[in-house]
Image (cartoon, rainbow, N blue to C red):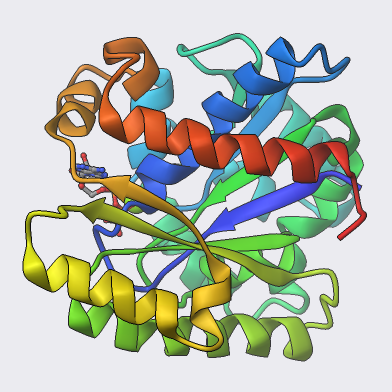
Length: 275
Ligand SMILES: Nc1ncnc2c1ncn2[C@@H]1O[C@H](COP(=O)(O)OP(=O)(O)OP(=O)(O)O)[C@@H](O)[C@H]1O
Ligand SMILES: [Mg+2]
């Protein structure tokens, strides 16, 4: 079973898109280095802001017939074929493929709201294509919207990026609750929270250190902490040039921290469905 990592948090600007794109590219590279027969990775952008699409393809002009919008609107028996058609190679690496978002996704939510089975409109076609990929990453929007629900229904592993600030960590329990609701409500037993990533950590800031310690000491959340990514200006510079952090500066602290996390995700992918 291909692992489907869903980067999610209803808070904005916490590093969902940065983590989804960086981990997707990093994982493909690490699997290639490990000699894995299949190291192709798919990145699915479900956010109408199209940030993950923009940085990995250099484009944010995908429309109704060449983006995720086309997949969601296709007749059910044609959705997998449409998905295969709209997936593109990223400009970062030929083995990183992208299912692009479109600003039209904003309207798709409204159009699909009353359609029966709407939350499965991503998971169903993806189930036909997933076997071609070593792993899949889904970037979600900063809200618990229908599109985020679709991403979670298609997922196996939710990863929750969070900034080291008080309200962010309090909000984490809401995110956990929401994921549990999707698992129970839409009957997706294979979905679980597999990690919390603290992003933009500045260890010079006392409040950041305090929050990280608090998270580590938390009975439930502490066990889920799987990565700490330092605040690093190189990330923003790389984004501005539509480059990955690895390409922009291979030794940038944020990239090094992401690679550490990639190592543990690679192990999980090689284990397949074993938990
Ligand atoms: N480790 C980091 N250090 C410094 N800046 C970062 C880091 N990670 C992300 N950023 C910057 O923070 C901003 C938000 O990051 P990102 O877009 O990944 O968050 P997001 O959760 O996807 O946001 P949204 O909720 O709007 O989709 C971006 O400008 C990005 O360049
Ligand atoms: Mg984003």
